[in-house]
Length: 178
Length: 451
Image (tube, rainbow over all chains, first blue to last red):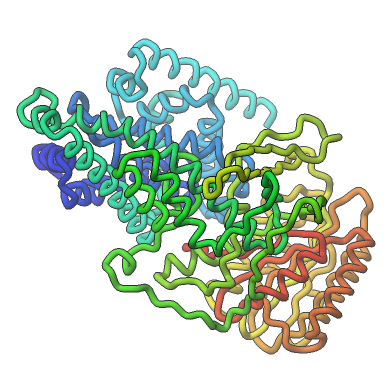
């Protein structure tokens, strides 16, 4: 989707054009779902989170002011929905959060290591995790991430520093104890 | 670990594509919310005619302000709404539920008004509630009543039949299906003076919600008796305060409000929340899976779904827990003797060997399962038989009462029963409910897990 037509769609949707809003949803559903999945690591939850985020978008769209890229603006919407979701469903653990046949995958070692790192990232404090995810997974600059997280750029850098310190410590401890 | 590695790992995580139905449903729901927001804005503009038009034309923030105002407006309406729906559902629950799960009472000063059948009650409430807010709010209320389920959390409608209902075509409805449900009798209104004691059961059945959701997702109205309101309400986890210590088995949250349909009457809403045991402290489990592999289970949403569910359950067990598997079809047989979860591969292999075929000697299966559970009975552990079936018992004891007695006797020996229902078209809901209630346990229904 090219930039001008996205802007056009958003403006029309903000004026109450239903079909424009529908087109906007269709073109961004996958991106929103992907954000949700990366956050929670589970297909069913990601779908539910995306659904709630889409419903929220119907009202929230009016407050989008074109001060950042639309996608950057969407991150906090989806991630906050995901956080609320995680809190509401904390009492219903779904297995260990991994794909059931993950461990049986043939390319074992690489995948297992990656899986461990992902688990560690998911166990980080929310804000640090959010920063790591926006910068390393979504490729946002620290400045853009700061915009999405509504904090200062230096705070983002600090979150990332802290998170990496924790990840490194955890992984080192792991390798020492075999 | 350096940045590049982190980026690679995060980037390489595979994201399975979202289910097409989930996508459509999300978009439909969002569009419904969009329409709602738009209607509110329009109402707002009509109400403040001049002002609305002045602001929406050439101001620097063309869309922002009216929408934001309407947002505040929407907030108040939602608040009124939550109260209104909550009370109606309270009453409907009171009227409809056989075993009022969260107990509901009605107290009057003097005589107790007998509410008319539920739809009228809903209407009265609407009118009463609508007296205070504006016409817009009233329309809003009506709309909500017609379209949404109990308002949960942020006021997001959770149960809207997609597609057919919108376009004006009545969805397919069939009151009699092959799925059997016990018909629901409305609870009578009782005088507190005559019946001062009310009891409630602490089990939480949720099967009805999952079944109804599945039917609605397929554009079919569920059978009337399949809709058990207390199960719809109990499906969700409510944020009632928890008891602080284990000594207090449950905490009650009581709200008293003036009755919306008769001045002078009071409506009491009692929410019960049980003590929450930390999952980390769970005792050892001694489980026997009793799996129905009869011919009727031969459908993608039955046996394969059941096997997947059992595997998921396995993942939550500790290495010291034991699992045994009994299957039944034409005859019942033990597929796996009690095995420690540490030897998970054995259990998985046994599950993968299952095939569907034959008739259904359910009663014999239940006997064998209990025998196995007794053989490895551990007083300190959770001893439980987990029955997974589509509910069709057609060989051996088919008499409900006889089965019920058997399960009740076993409960006294410390072995409990959980019942999981699968598929549709054959679901004998009443039998399963009888079994689960007498096995001192819950019964739920598994909807398809799209893979």
